[in-house]
Image (cartoon, rainbow, N blue to C red; front, top):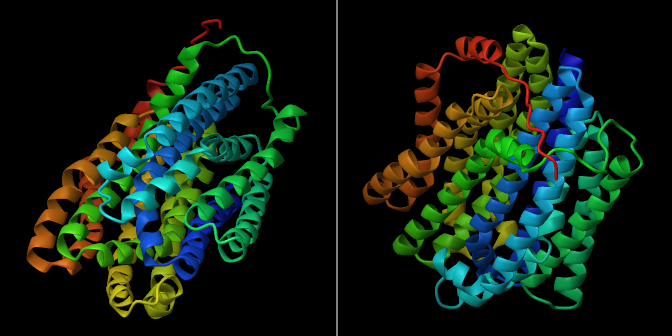
Length: 444
């Protein structure tokens, strides 16, 4: 079991780490080549980017859970049809979102809290990033379906390729061609597009069980996948709400330097978040498959292994960052004021990811067994209930350091609340007892 677990979680974690490293690279290149205003402007746009990622994860986890469950039940034809319908519907959704963000980019960043000179910077980044919405969304979704189709290494290598291309293009666009903040968005978009092209042959030439083609399932398949995957969207939306509230609090407390410091923190900690997310998404096919075969023992074993791995990785990275905080902050900025704030914030924020890893594992697990109400409750508690309260109280009492500590406190409260109120073994028994096979067969 451990070999199966590592064969999926390690490539998934590496793929997500590499993908998140693109964001870190963007911050490094923008901080050095353009300046603090550039990374502050991009940080304003992060909530929208998290929505893109949330849509990707919603389709990836929801569709992947249905696909793996049907594989476990021995119905591969239904699994393939679900895959095809999810991809078709997702393409239409991505085009609509891309058009909206391009046309209304300036209005969107103002709503997100951009002021003064940050407005045109943030709007430019959003406009160019949104042009590549389809490739960015589909790359994540295809990566997840590859893991559900026993091809995790291809997803990992495609992500690594995107990162290499991103490095090269960022350097060329920023330092050679002097194209400013839009360079990072274009470089990331092109890298994701090439990675997507690497994944497509697996499905086009039927290297696995999943493939492109006609489908007999209507919109009901997509709706069912989105229902199961919605907590993953909510988790990313929660993160975007967290960033939004932090940006507002920092803007009112310390101004643009605080937003720049927070941008550095987000760049530096995105690796931890995405590694943990990669671990949880990597184990999803195993839990979903065993849910299909009704093997409770394996499901809980994989769940416990994921919890332990997330805690270990989060704690290890937190300790490393604690000793290298000033060096890391100095990579993104040369301002002593910004660096000093970022170092303190980095240490407090990193500790939150130990609890966040447990919360994400529980979120994915309840999605995999189709008990999404608990995943939704966790997402709402994390973003729109507990965090705003903690942020308001702590910022008023402790100032900027209270802002940095708010996520740590909020994640810990959510972890304890769910741990004490929901019995995961009992809910697993209940899920298996009430398990229903997907039967939507509307034609298109």
